[in-house]
Length: 254
Image (cartoon, rainbow, N blue to C red; front, side, top):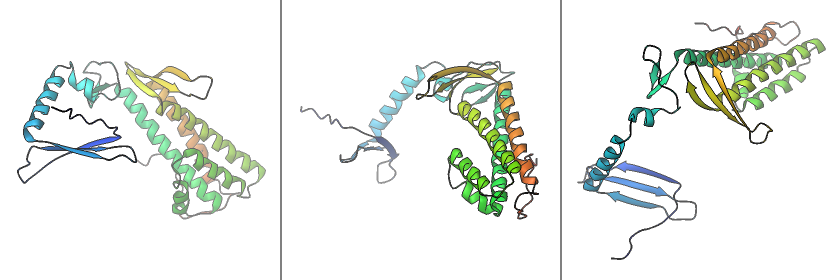
């Protein structure tokens, strides 16, 4: 019998279950290949599909602690049930989850105050400032826009220095958050280990254990940065007035 093997490169594969017309139980596989090459499709009949399902089930059954191996997106240690909370087969220390949640809230509120400052600097309505601010997903681009607006706002020298200092404080906490969020994580009891990769720097690979307290400290620094920016929004003496909305203090409303 001639060799029926067909070799080809694929960039994506997706499957679909066939319904109706006597095809119940059959599965169609679609293979997308690199540009310039033909795409391929094959259909497994109900019997072959059932056999493949049994084979996968037998293989999965041989893996110890299946839920932890397949569902734990972030590696970590098992914790006592009385202490841990469980998501997707992973044990988490609730103190870590709480600290990360607070950090997300404070980061969001800092962005809100940056939008209000941007609106005040350019005498825009808040919705207009937000549309421009969020027109780029890059935070550096957003900060560059606010800094450019600061220089063009006609501020006194003292006020200009205050705004630039507040922006520097905001950028500093954002840089620390970026290292935390964009590292590889491994959860540990009472904290988690991050591995930061910076290929174009002298310290290309850095490993550090982060505690819940470390995250809380960063969240607190975010709060300080947010309130610093908010104080400039409220201080309208030497800045254009925008009364479209009442500026936020940076405190959660609930």
